[in-house]
Amino acid sequence: MSFLVVGSVALDTVRTPFGEAVDVVGGSALYCAASASYFTKVRVVGVVGEDFPLNEIDFLKTRGVDFQGLHVACGDTFRWAGVYGHDFNTRETLETRLNVFAEFNPQLPDVYRDSRDLFLANIDPALQLNVLEQVKRPRLVACDTMNFWIERKRDLLNALLKQIDVLILNDAEVREMAGSADLIKAAKQILDMGPRIVIVKKGEHGAFMVSKESFFALPAFPTEGVRDPTGAGDCFAGGFMGYLAQTEVLNDDAFRRAIVYGSVLASFNIEAFSIRRFRSLTKDEIDGRVRALREVTRF
Ligand code: AMP
Image (cartoon, rainbow, N blue to C red):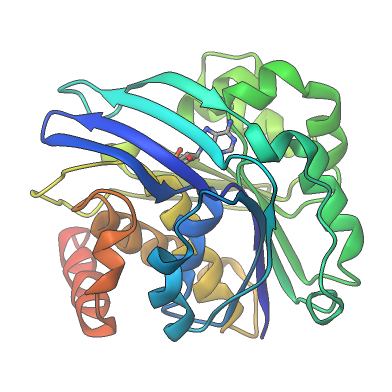
């Protein structure tokens, strides 16, 4: 099993009703890698600037995350700033500065080219396509994106959708991509654009999955200690893909169980700013929440 993620590695400035964090490590690839590392070894492709505090991600190496594909370029790291109101389901982006990402042309280390499973985390779709082309014969390709790219790089996204298996988006992005306010219908319309599975994340209201044959919905784990929802979507994807990376048969049951693990990993991440929660999180805690979620959804 070999799992590769490409995405942003960032310095984030985040304000929530519970506090503020300035220039902390984040980015879609880091959140995903931290989360997936509980299930499988993870290879990361991305770029940072010389200002990035590499020592802050060292603890992920001890969890089996491989940063050979993380390029350190001249210039500043990608920066994102956002603010959450009392409703954690909506946030306002205050700033997006691509910096070193604007010039990034990922070259995969040779040893990464045989990666079996691939997550193209939220990043410029041109880079997602570039990385996908460099992986020899992936078994499973999942992808995320956001309004920023749907509005600026639609043609590239359409080309990408034809080459992936699973699309993981939040509800607003699904509506925007399909151009339809009816969420279930919008998700099904996206199935016609290429992916065989569409997973729709709805923040504290959980997630659902549609395919041509099946529908599955799961509430979010009822977390009480939310501090910062940033990265929840990427941690969901990391738990989902990490679980599948250690699974040989990719059938509907496996995808359903993967959604449970994705939801549980996301529920831990939001208890602390940045990727801090992963410094202490244990496999036993994860298993405990999977059992609790099973109980919550039993009837
Ligand atoms: P999420 O809360 O799951 O949407 O992920 C938040 C992470 O996405 C933050 O750590 C940001 O650094 C990163 N991010 C925000 N905007 C972008 C963008 N346009 N491209 C890539 N990554 C982004």
